[in-house]
Image 1 (cartoon, rainbow, N blue to C red):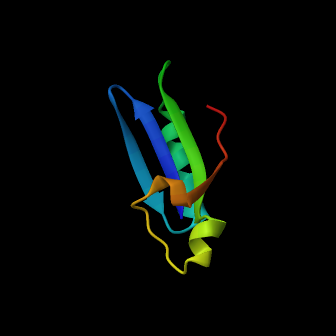
Image 2 (cartoon, rainbow, N blue to C red):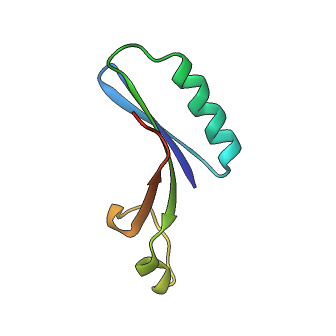
Length: 73
């Protein structure tokens, strides 16, 4: 799963995608529209090794995910 997090104004917006191409399009589109002081993040989210060994995958517990950030802001 891929996520794009846009931090603008008061609350962050989180978009999630099943493929990298759609996520990257969202990231690039929002990156062009950013104002000073706002931020955008792009990351790949996978089940952690520990959680894979348990034979489960869920997004209800953040400590069970490995996040690989690709953005610099």
